[in-house]
Image (cartoon, rainbow, N blue to C red; front, side, top):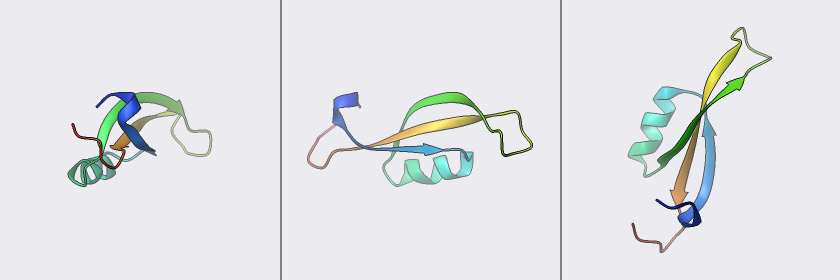
Length: 58
């Protein structure tokens, strides 16, 4: 998928949710490290997911 084909963007922090969204047609665009100041962890992974615009074939 090219970035101009993306109709929706979503940030996900849970691997199981990523897997479920892939089944629903979402695609993984990027994985980036993020700081999570409100949790006990010092860092986490942010999975950036995208869904195609309606009518865009791929």
